[in-house]
Length: 325
Image 1 (cartoon, rainbow, N blue to C red):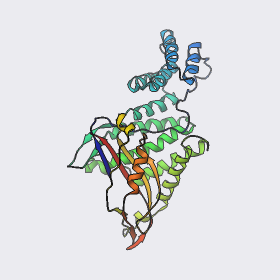
Image 2: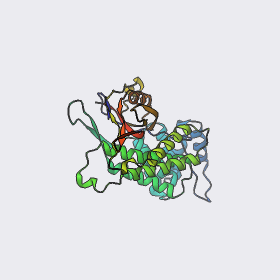
Image 3: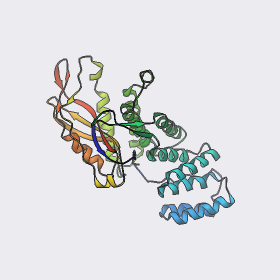
Image 4: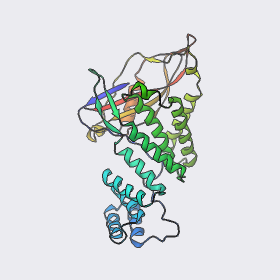
């Protein structure tokens, strides 16, 4: 694991959507939206959040049990960077309308983006760092997005998020103190990667080639498929590639200013000579840190993997941690 340290207390996981940033959603079948709801939707599309919020407040003054109004208010608070208020509004919408697919999706995404799956940091020894993640919260978010998919979410973003949650889950596991007893109940890593590939593949089928993030998603699908197609780990003689040096990544000014920290997972192809081939970011943080992670991984010198004592090309993962302590 590659680590970069700075001082500050915040950790975030940022997951990027494939398509539009907000999903307006659909009203209850047979119910005509009020003028305030319609006006709020138009204002949201125009990014006029002040007007949108005012319209929703007017709607709630006469219709306090409107699930759609609470959902739209949650969307507005998300865009205003007020995650706690957004989560509260979305939870109210779900309570009023338990089958509200769009609200479940946005609730799961907001919980994840807010960093609630992260509980703190731990220094295990000098020059070593691990992040403590709340696996229970992460799994509850994963269950909610799975529910949304099972109950009718048919656009690319929920599938993209579901795939990222699987990758996030396996990444977090490797950076969390887990008891030996608990380890016996964990899903095999390969099974988690299989699920991630399924979700990414579905997102790719639903997305359009000209959508933002399409090529990055295709790269993830191609990499995970190559990784899962390799049967090396089943052979007891197989030895994975090993890094011979640990180059540190650089922090970007933007990431430091926004106090962004977390783990980036990079996929890399290591050839039979220890050289590197294709690399792709499987789980990123944005703010320029993904590129810095790629640069750090590119500087690693590997001892090649072997099978029956002979060097082989191997597809593998490298985690790069950015910490503001």
